[in-house]
Length: 479
Image 1 (tube, rainbow, N blue to C red):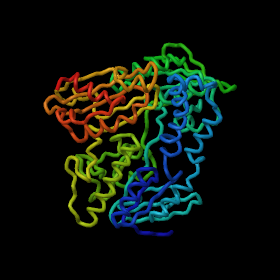
Image 2: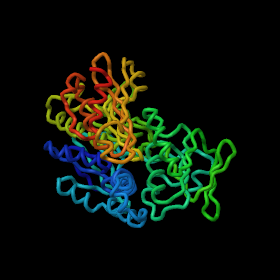
Image 3: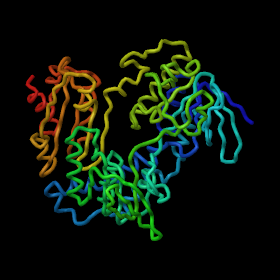
Image 4: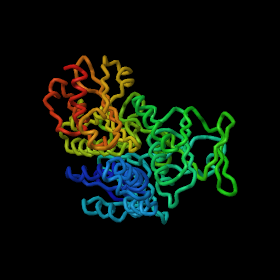
């Protein structure tokens, strides 16, 4: 048994774990990282990058068809094989050589195997050959093991071998018929992508499509999917599932109706990858989400840090925000605060402090790459009211901006800002329309910076762009 000591040991080499280790090393400490699958994690191989590669080709084709002159040059449909090849390249063909090489370049040793917490500050790594290496952390252990697709207890579902997001994103062939259980981000994006690729798609959305967003979001995405031929069944729920010998999947709804498909994607949520990482050794429940304070220290009952505060959790596993970019944001705070505590430096953990992940609370940006694209940051109007804020909701038709007609013929879109009336600052912003993703960061800065509306009048949008919506929203507000 080999024993090696580092200042910090990170379990999980996805984007979050990589960023924690990098910040720790930049701060002058040593760090090691443990990974049981591919360095780069879910985002690199089964989520962010390959999914957006699948979606981009269809979006580009739609954009060309919506501009006269370009429309006439388009003579065919998507080349499915080419789309899948491009997807494969963005997933690095499911090889992690490049990212493993990056760890070596930044001075972070990689231990391949399954990492488990053995005791305080000790991580035991079991390799593929069964050999165990014991890593000891002088200052901190960081859990960055992420999450996996949740497969619910529906009769026959597991036996039917459904697709999760992983199998869907890595599919080598496009099924003729695809059924999707769920109506969230993964469900709506994959319904868009596979419809573009030629599948006949049925979405079983018990709670509706993108129901946690502003109401107009789900309405517009649902309408768009139906226009593309997708059967969106709102309020329906699967009661049982069975796969026949010929591979056909039959989903029996709770109403007794049956839906048949060649493949079934289950996309109803996520579960933490904490089932077998040794949580029981520190008094925590295996398989549970990890509660943390604002500096990402794992806490137990009453919000008290585990032990003397040596255990941290960043990214999906702490359930604060299940988004890669937000996990990387947490990782920067974690790496820096570990360094500060190790060196006895002051910890800046107040609101918007360097060592606190404040944006997790009310300033999370997100893009859903459907048609229309959805971009949002901060609170929805419903969430703002639930938080006790006195708000005013301001809406504007994106198609009424000068830039929209130039952008695309028949441009359709919508913008909403949610204003905290007591402070006259924006606390939420949502856009729905073609290519709105790149407009989101301006709204994120306004929310995070708590920029007063009176000052925003001086942020003049360039003409003629769709960003003119900022001026129109302020005019509608009346300041």
